[in-house]
Image (tube, rainbow, N blue to C red; front, side, top):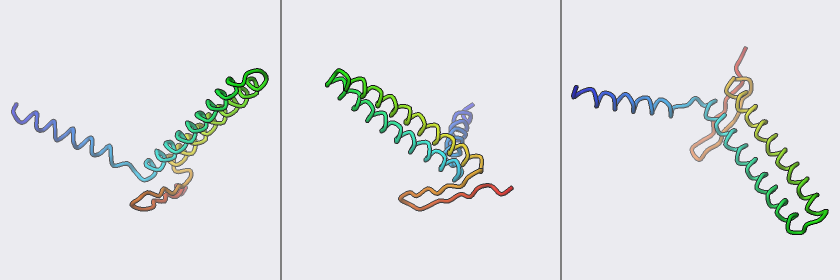
Length: 113
């Protein structure tokens, strides 16, 4: 029983390490998701600013600002959807991608059929 706990710790550490070793395609898909999520969040923040400015002015300007902010939020949703579709295509090997980091550049090509 004394060897059970250390064995379980080694097993858990090994599983954690294996989870960190993603394929280049999975890492690139994650990067696409992160980038598009950040872009969508930025668009939504700008929509909030537009809406708040319209509320401060009031009247017809408020209505126009609300419509503009709604359109911006729809655009943010489209950015998210597009990023998810691209990430899925990268993972499925349908399209290639290039990811550049501080340590290098990785390119994956579409799967050959």
